[in-house]
Image (cartoon, rainbow, N blue to C red; front, side, top):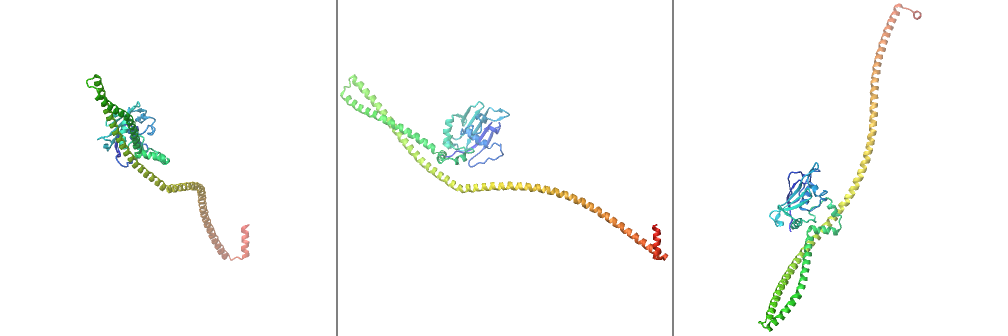
Length: 388
């Protein structure tokens, strides 16, 4: 059994994609879908789940299926449609493989395969050929990975069996064993009848030889023998057919057992890989825990430093205000000092002029004294008279 690949999906009136028919290419391998919040990235997965009937309305984040129909200003369209195109239809036994699902406003839903209506049960049987199961993990939703990691080994093994397809073979094997058991019961039931018929036939053949062919009772007996012989042949055919069916079922059961052994071995390998990965991740988890603790410590220190910085900035603002005030005072004092210095210069200039005048007057006085040739006593008397 190979893997199926989706080539593209075509949506009409589905969720937030509007009323226009929109074609979204996908293809094989890993496909990354990017875009801003609300662009409709997760709606692509919802469209695939809806189109193939793999999820419920709850997992598609809708109250019910009718809420998947595009709605604008309270007006809902009549229907929503999703077409899922596969790039390798041969895996399903078709030359073309397009699955269509339509949900109407009244809640009715229908499936189509290549344009023809098909029952959901029949569709899932066909999808199983490509490894797509309704209860499988073809679609991994948000939170499933965390849930998977937290599962017990037994629960995880069950999921891996589903993904690997072992469950499907186990179901087929169980069905084959049930059919084989029914065949054995049928053979056991038929064997006594065949043995009884063979004994009766031998008895009738001996009686046939002893009876007269011309007798009416003899003719009747011959007819009964013929009927018994025919019934024996039919029973032998049924027995042979049942035996062949039993052999076919045993062969099928043997092949299924071989397949289960192979899948079980693969499962053990996967479980070992998971165990190895968990062991590999352990130091990283421890390191991550330490880093988380360190980050929390750094955040606390950062908060404290920011608080201190805020406090210092507050002090700085006060100091800057004081500095600004002092600078203004200093500027005023400098202006006042400049005025005083200018006044001082002016006064010094006045003093200089007065001293100059005094010197001139003294010179004049001395000159007058010399001209008068008066004695000091006379001069003192003149001064006194002048004062009086």
